[in-house]
Image 1 (spheres, helix red, strand yellow):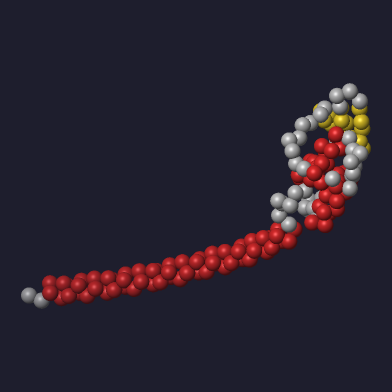
Image 2 (image 1 turned 90 degrees about the horizontal axis):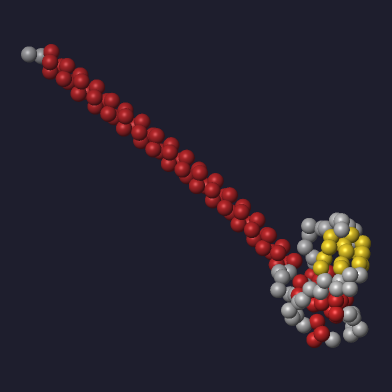
Length: 155
């Protein structure tokens, strides 16, 4: 039974025609019109990803469809099986990655704050050294000026 649903190239028979946001009309090669009413709840507009249990249930339902299905149903079953393949990350993996990203973001924020504080400390030290050097230069200039004045006064 599982061999019937093995992924293969999928050929679409007919075309999809969207009549409205809640009504899906499928036109097949014999121009029969099949209206499938689908509300937003049936489609599942949740922003949350599917849980692993839901995916397992979907796959089991598709595999339980049996042999007496039409070619269109077989095609849709193959699509469902391909879309629910285990290649997608599990919910636990996504939650773990989200926690890791949060931890890394907190650590990055801490490092950025620490670097800013270090830059502020260096700036304060630099300003202190500049003030000290300006005071020493002013003191030297005052000494030189007063000694030059003293030398100019004494003949």
